[in-house]
Image (cartoon, rainbow, N blue to C red):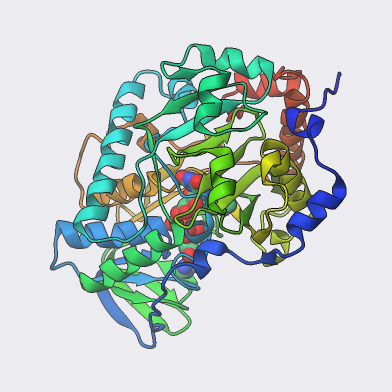
Length: 469
Ligand SMILES: Cc1cc2nc3c(=O)[nH]c(=O)nc-3n(C[C@H](O)[C@H](O)[C@H](O)COP(=O)(O)OP(=O)(O)OC[C@H]3O[C@@H](n4cnc5c(N)ncnc54)[C@H](O)[C@@H]3O)c2cc1C
């Protein structure tokens, strides 16, 4: 198969330039350092509650906040194994998308009958999230600037031509000036940007202010659900006896055996620059402050922070056999070098700029590239996980679904096929590692062959397992 260098490879800077850019970077999550933190006491004794929420990422935090808003008298306890927002919710790109389906193509191909409803519900969810941020006084630097998709290879330009908001090379470079950008499309309404760690920590603050008992450093080790009566949520410090339980543990080992094979952690890597000077910023433009993403299978995403740093992430997506989430997977020098090289290829005018932070996180991948929603223990335990790298907005929708179902409500949300139907699980090891790594290899080949998908990818597409970002 031909292997043509990508635009980033054709414009790669010298090794010494990449080394210099990375020399001052630390392995640390910029967002977590840049967000005021409160701490919440661990649970120390057994207690009871109407609703226990397990997990202090966005999904668990929205569930707790919205439960209180639906009924302020509900006694809600939230249990977090480490600290609020330490995982994906505190270290992501902060792209808050309306799409609940990982884009239109994935949504239309899986749920053609109800796609229009999913599209509307996703837009309503993003508007509701924005209204909540305003009404609850959540300081998370939300910017409704939309997202700019850019073509960096000639074959990608054709993919954009159909788009309503097509921008030619001059128009896209007038927005963000990179010599690699050949065309673009600016979706102004479909997404917002947030400061991810501030959103998580602010949600915890609001939850506590509404009366939710938030406990950090409290790991749930098991659930006991007798045929009738309350569910026992076990922690090393004691048990919470609860009428209802919402599991929001995402990519971490599920407390329910039935969902253990439903997600795999795929590591995604991120760099953050120092703040740009006025002259550096002027050299790239970016007055519209849009979220930015390219159209390769292995894509990059990028954005500005409030203090005009540039976040640059994506491309490599690394799966380690065994499905584990481990801090040691977060440092991957070859990936950070590749990301830095691609950044300088995209913005050669920023040569001399330093990266200050580098980090990684586990993407909560499911086989349908969209969260799954379920009920267990005769309707007393709800769960949602598998947001596949697009959970900033979709976790709020999932929280609403869990609360609808735990209250026995039938709503437009709970009637969705997307909500009712479980996706295929991943196979056990070693097949999972073989399949995922073959997929990644093939996507890389496609990016080096004008986007052409090989037989393996076409077979996955036919089975509904193909990934097309
Ligand atoms: C690098 C990176 C970039 C991303 N970029 C974007 C983006 O730009 N836009 C987007 O939409 N999405 C993005 N995502 C995905 C997004 O961050 C996630 O989908 C979202 O944060 C999921 O929220 P969550 O609450 O389900 O999970 P998490 O934030 O992972 O929270 C789960 C929590 O559950 C806790 N927990 C687990 N097990 C237990 C237990 N037994 N007892 C108690 N607590 C437990 C964990 O400690 C954790 O705090 C990105 C992810 C990564 C890693």
